[in-house]
Each structure stands twice: as C-alpha cells, then as structure tokens.
Figure 1 (tube, rainbow, N blue to C red):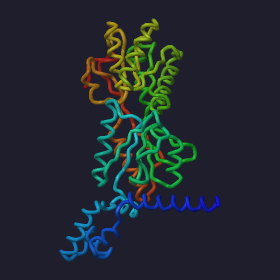
Figure 2: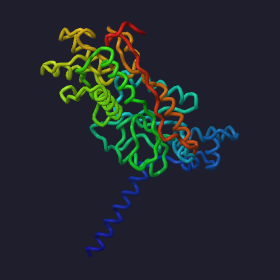
Figure 3: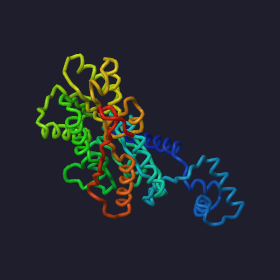
Figure 4: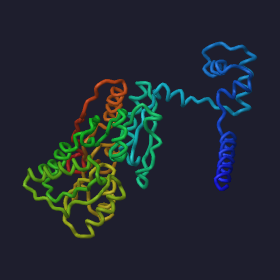
Length: 358
C-alpha cells in the first residue's frame, strides 16, 4: 500500500514537473512552424534570408515569431561553427596610465585583422568564480599577469584553447606563448645611471603588486645594479608601491616618518612616481636636489609633470599588437613564438638631476 502511494505521488510529481517545464520552456523553430502552418525548412529560410520565400508565408512566420516571442539562436549558430571572430582580454584590475596604451595596441591590431574585443576584469574577491569569458564566446584569450587562476589556465590549455600570456611566465610544462618587456635590463640601466652620474647610493625601491613578474624582474635589476657598484642591499629601503599612486604616497610617508636616510627613489612605475612626488613635496624635499626620483614605462604624463620624470620607455602598445599577432597565429593553427621579449629604453629627464630633455 505504501509502495502504491509512493508511486502515485511520484507520478503526480513528474506530471507537475513536466507541466511546469512546458510552461516555461522557450519557443523553438518547430513551434514557429506549427503556428505559421509552414514547414521548419521555411522558417529556417526566413531566418537565414538566403533563399526567397513566398510573401504570405514569410509574413505568417514573422507574425508567429512575434506572438511566440521567439528569439533566433544566433549564439547557437556561432557555437556550431566554432568561430566568434572575437578575442578575449582578461585583466585582474584595470587602473593606472599603463592600460590605455596596452588597449590601444590591442584594439588597433584586432581592428586590422577583423576581430572584435571582449574585455573581462576578474574579481579579486572571488577568484574561483566561473568566468563569463572563455571558449564559449571567444576564439582565444589574452591573459594579463595574475588575472586567471592556475586551474583555469590548465583547463583551457588542456582543451587546446588558444592562449597568450602578457607579462607572465606560463605554468611549468605548459607551452603557452608569452609577450613581455626587458624589465631587468631597463632597471639596471636606470639604477646604474643614478649611481654613476648622480652619486646616489641610498636608493629606495617600491615593489609592485605581489606575484607581479614585472616588479620581480625590476627588483632583480635594482639589486644587480647595486651589487655591480659595490653597494650593499638594505631591506629598509624596500617598500610596497603596488604600481599605484596612493600606495606609493603612503609608503614614502612611512619611510620618512621612520627617519630612514635615502637620496633617490626608484618608484617601480610611473603611476607610483606620482605618489612619491606628492609625499616628497609635502615634506618639502626638493626633486632632484634632495631626492632623485625615477619611474618605469614612460607613460604620457611622464614628460609633463614637474620636474619631468626620468624613466624607462616600455613599448606598451607594441606589446599589445604583438600579443594579438601571436594569438591569431594560434587560432589559425600556426606556430606561435614561445617568448617575445621586447626591448626597453632609458629616457633621461630632469627628475634624476640631469638637464632638461624631451
């Protein structure tokens, strides 16, 4: 008796579920054909627009679609062809003067190659959340440093989805192309200039965000320049600038509050250099007379601030263009270059103590 009651209840549940599913399901092409009293092939011809259809039939199909609120599944057709003509760009956070230059290079090259750009900024508070960008809506991804977790990169690589990394080395054993700049050589040239031309020996270095490879290579260049000139490394001269104006401002305020002697600052990047300028000017310390300040990247404002900023010119736009070129090679089934290391250039201006330059 119990089994009969259970079975009947189960059947009623199935019936209710089926009715609910029927009530809320989306209309299909078959529903449109039935309502318009035409064949499915006729509806398909109306949707595609590539074969003439009798005017009265086309009108009935259009009316049926309106009544049923039918939406053509263009996304399904894209998935069937496995081609979206869209490239994805994944950032962890879009901020600072660096990103517009990178985006300009990426967009220019994509436009030339006939691709659209889809941008997604990952949420650092929810790094494991499912990404709304990937193999379902792009043909390949450009991944900026630390913006995708290890598991997602491994998953995409395992299904042979085209990936190119910007400013980040691939995981061990993964053959993913990398586009980056010569951070270490640029930092060596910058710090060596401070030492050799301006006799600065107590040089603060402001690190970038944790895990950021650009920052790690710049710090390595900083340390190598000190070592090659016989200057001992001092941990008290290292602080966190995060490639961010406000963070750098606070870091410099703390260094001065702790009475740590210094005569120069390598800000890590140009955005952080603005924070250094603010802190030094509030403390009435003159740039470059009291403290030399240098940055990295040579973004647009660097030549216009006062004093004009000595920095390292990074080919940011070219990085974006080359990343697109490498990704499209992968999408086309061609071989991509494993590592593209783009050269940097020392740009001398007034903030280090040199006479004015462009």
